[in-house]
Image (cartoon, rainbow, N blue to C red; front, side):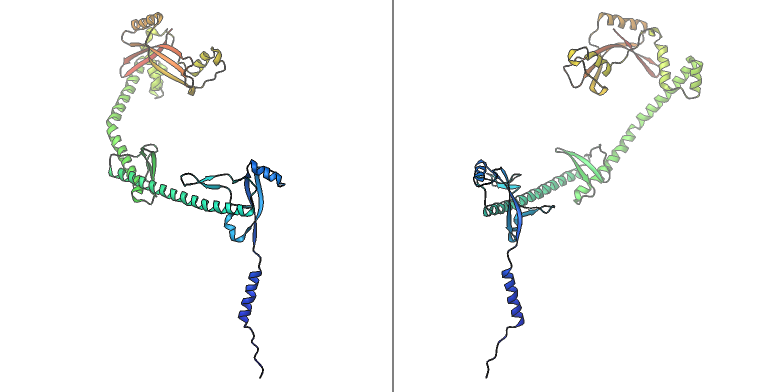
Length: 375
């Protein structure tokens, strides 16, 4: 009797064939660039070994597919070993980040580069984790801070949001010790999103209250203005020229022009005196160009600061002129005014001053005023 011949099953044969193909498949490699720096000793060693001796070195290496986490591939398809940025531990045990590749005293081999990349990868992961934790802690702290501010604002009816920019129903700004803080109604936190509506309600309530409080003042001002219009119309009808009276009847004579006509009539006794011409940037520029260090100076209106006040002293000629005005206009108030124009940027630059005689007089509901030139 013949012995039976055993044949392998199809499944076991296929498994053995597949296992043999896997074991025979070569390990896949990725070509990457390793960038590092050589110290002076390293540059010397590079020259002795036939290298270029440069400080910044780029070396092409083969990285196994099992270590692809140590390689970064940019959008252009360039693979680089993760040596830059470089992560290190400081004296306090915290991970720091520098935008420099590692430095070697001798050209490193493949194993040393891979070890450095693995160490840099681990420290980089720790650095990113610490930064994420720090950001999370900052957001939590900021959220709690904003919640405390919102709760304090909602609990205290005397607090107000910043008037500029004006609060709305969707957002507002609260002024705190750390500056202004924005609150929006779309926020998810309950105490925070309630602030804009409450701030807007208080803002509108204050506006209505202020309008009611100022209503008597506005009514008095309106009444005074109407009185001035009636007085000016009566004065023009009595003392104006036919042309002025015709324009007044047509409603085309402005109040400032009528005041100017009344001022001319009230100050007729000194009408021969020259008027005062205000000084400004152009006059100060001419004044400064007389100095050798400011011969090329150019000034605009925004470059100067003009201050005005009562004169603290007077020359003999100014005092005599002041008395002349007082004698000519005994019922008017006559004072000596001093005007100073200074360069904002240079406090050591000369200041241009001028003096004028200010004459004021009450005339019905008006206070007429005019400035005259003084020596």
